[in-house]
Length: 229
Image (cartoon, rainbow, N blue to C red):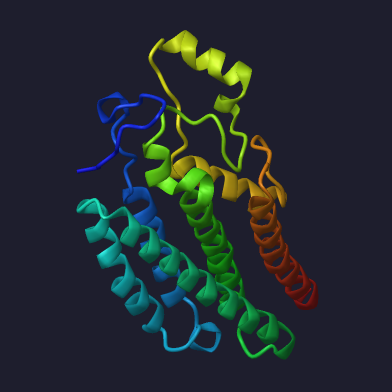
């Protein structure tokens, strides 16, 4: 059970909404691990079983610590897990960049690998945004609503709050994993955030890295398609 101390502002644990569900993030982690196993051996970061084993070793204690309310350990395991996924993705991306001019892989294999890494890029950075924004899911759970953070989501604006209040007087909005997934998807497709401006410097750095990775994958596919034609 979540343990939240009464703050100086007078917020009690009974005033807070139920904790944000973590299962969407767990599904995203599993999908990324499966995407790595779908890569050909020449583009995989180490043995193809390495990524799923590493994810399994880290995700089990992360789930257990979250269920037991040990937020500090869950925070640590979550960051390590995201870092490991990022390392595997960048490693495979480097191998993909090297494989395109060498033409060792069949075009269909390169296409599948690039698509897998493009999807992994979205999920990995969605996990980072979800894990870091406003103290992460546990930090957001300890607040009444979401009024400040690294991203300016539409419900945080005056018009967005007015729309929410018109539907329910007691409705308090706080971002969940799907909101960060939508943000990451837009960053990979439009190479920039769309409906949610980036406010914090660390978030700007992450969005630039994500957009650069997405642009690299798209450029590789375009170059390979031109060579085929």
